[in-house]
Image (cartoon, rainbow, N blue to C red; front, side, top):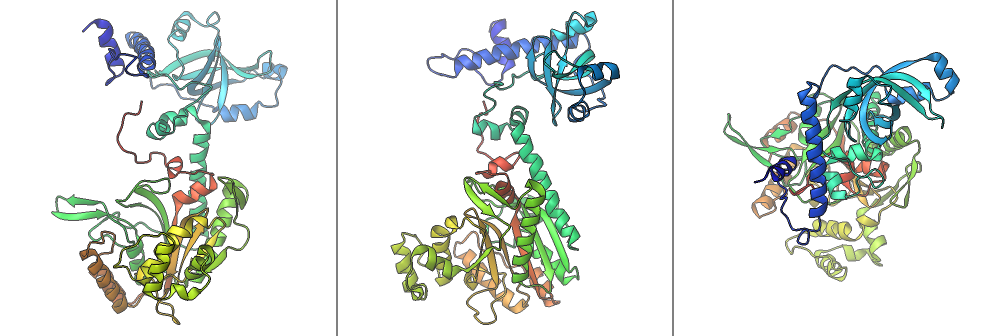
Length: 520
């Protein structure tokens, strides 16, 4: 192997420098990038030789945002008279002659480095500088002839050498898959990405503040569980070596939070990570963030009111308005949310003229066939009705809508309605065609709950991998007495999607799960 090929291979492991460009249309671009990487490695070697590689002694005293704000209204004469010396650090994102721009993660600012005015050692160091490098700089503020606020650099240090070139400054990083696989590059190249995740942080903080102000206690419950419960979902399975036990990553914290109600904690909430071994889509990630909250002596209707208030306050606090657009659809959280029974929604959106067609298994099967909704012949009425709703109605609920009166058959943890035991006191909130929240009056009858767990266990034994397990300890907790209560789960990732106008959940997760592959 020649020295040249050795350098290129070291510069980009896994790339073949002998690839024929005619066979691989990306080979020419890859070869060009390899040359850039090799040149940057040469510069890094020069820094190492001078003992200047990756120093950790620079401490910035200022930030670009603070500097831009402080001197925004100072003209050239005032800046000169002030002779204000600043010290800041950031990544080089643009270079043009003696001018370069650095971004410190919060804002950008221009620097002026004239090699003729710098000491010889710094002038030589300047030759080793590339786009993407992280530098620390000190100097006085001034305005250029065009009026641009700039730091006249008197001293600087190259703090971190970037070996890989940044995306094109005009095109940015536009490859969606690459943006998701290499989020760190996306954050460098696209300021709007950083803004989106800063807004996510604001949204989570606003949610937490709402429940703190409402007197709820924030708690933490196990993520590693002996029995996965609280949701109909397929869990991830692992093994505890010391205990020699199979264990599961939680699918929901619900049953632990309700144990706290038994213990006398009357108002609790948890911002939690859940894991479900299911498919990937624009709305689903196997690892996701949920808000769950429970309150003793409340009913599901109370939580519908609370949810409306929560979403209005969070939206107003974080994006400045309760009315906004999501993917071209106008969403108004400021007006009362619509409330509609599940059966009523099917009648309205599926063009069912006679509601009696939703009664009886034969009628529902006929309707499903008519609507081209596939189903399992073993399903009961409740499951079949829900399937019709999910396939034909859910995606059409754009404006905020509470769907209520779910069948008992598909709601194993919910309290039955006092007047109609075939339905439960439950709601799901839909906005922009997707489920955002699920809440209900809690089932606190231990015998009823045990019977429903047994039915779920039978379904699991019959092949339903998402059916719940029988949780004996939870039944024991209920037998000590749980107060009447309401509970709810709300998807944080989907809420962030809504408030940031993001069509895919991957846009609001810093590191979404993806099939392994070459990131480019």
